[in-house]
Length: 188
Ligand code: SF4
Ligand code: SF4
Image (cartoon, protein in one colour):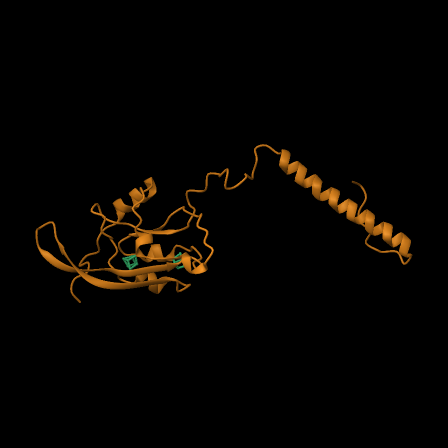
């Protein structure tokens, strides 16, 4: 492949025609050479997704999840920090009061999310919402494969964020570090 495509096209139309033909053949062969090299290369760097899937980085950030306590109740205190922090304005949280019984047997009112939506179509997966969470109950999972025909379906709600699927080891570790903030949800 010592030849290079012509940089100057002849004024003679017949010569120009063959110059173009040669240029097209040369660039096609060059492209196929790269394709062939990569197709034969081992180990492979690409796979036939989704039939085959590569291990993704443990640091991957994708779909969000809200952690729950052992009883399946959301740990979120509906403080709105994630909503205020999100640079893309794709988090919306509304709150409600619920009555819980403390380990000491007292009843108290706490804040919990009434609605909680995240628009994944606008999210840039920066993780700022999770970092802002004072009780460490919001985090981004490695679930990157969600395809919808309607962009509105990419807005996940509270149920979607609290899915009862088994927690990964990472999520279990996150839940261990999750804790209720002092004075969580006290009246006011
Ligand atoms: S990851 Fe970033 S863009 Fe996405 S919801 Fe959280 S703060 Fe917003
Ligand atoms: S920052 Fe955390 S606790 Fe506050 S609303 Fe968001 S997820 Fe809930």
